[in-house]
Length: 247
Length: 160
Image 1 (cartoon, chains in turn blue, yellow):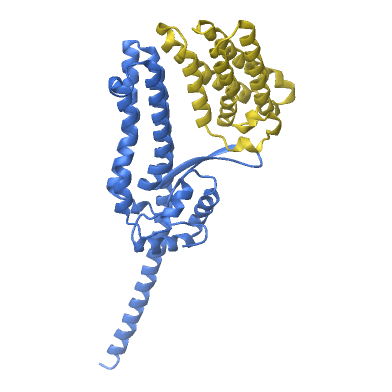
Image 2 (tube, rainbow over the protein chains, first blue to last red; image 1 turned 90 degrees about the horizontal axis):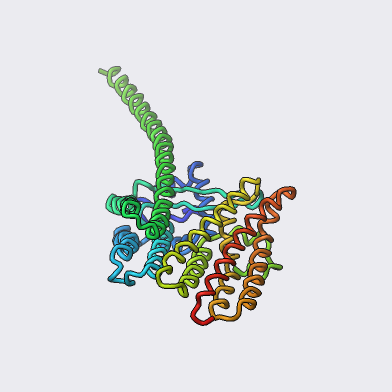
């Protein structure tokens, strides 16, 4: 592993070797610098780096712990909203406060913890020191192919189902004219929608990277194979000539 | 948060580390406090109104500052405005404990000036000088309306 580049533990030792090779490639050095530079500013990235350096963690261990947490966090906010009698009573104010806090916690969890663990994507905001402008960064890890299919499915399903359900509830509020509940539902819709937007942009960035990377890797491998084939062919031709001459 | 409490020590560096958790908690606290002592049939209305006014008011003031050519990002500005609600939170706690109208008026006025000066410390620098009044006026309106809500909410308190 190169200097600032921390390998997320999403694979076996084979992945480590692959990523070490990738870290030398010019395209990924920018990503590794960005990751190392932002490690101080990211929320969960310090704990992430600490866990990731222990590369003996199997991905199944991480994934199986993170999957139920991911599904739970979004569902909890929905449950508290839909079953008022069970948790906080049918009063407006405690329900509102509880649902908003749970939704905000869910947003933080999905953005900082489960996204990085399950699918290796992250996005955050940086304020440029010189000009005072803020930039949104959307990043994906190089080893996208080591993301487990189950983790990915659970993550994306939960990500899209949450705002869809809140949208349905919002429609229900509008149609039944419960406007004070509409405020709450719109807030929660916004929070889940923010995560969807961020991760979709990350995914697009990941796809672009994969396309660029696979193109260059294919060229490299293709070139090596071609060179090897040429040498074999030349060697075979020479041997054939030597055989012809005596016989 | 500390920058609001000590307006003298505020500087632009702290603005870089914006977050929206503080403003969310402060907004919820203010709305909860104001609705706590409202008449029963108005509780949800008061809560929702305060929440929407704080959120939309902060957004509008931010958009106004941005459109006037402010050199600040949307979230930084909302963060500042949200944290500067804190003195008004204190005012609402004090007002809800009770007291004559003059006392409540004085408390709300002091906290209003505290809030406004703290947020002016950030917002004023980031807007071109000739348009500063245009950016500051909605800020005044925003905090005045919240202060007014605090003042009239306390009138129905059972302790006053």
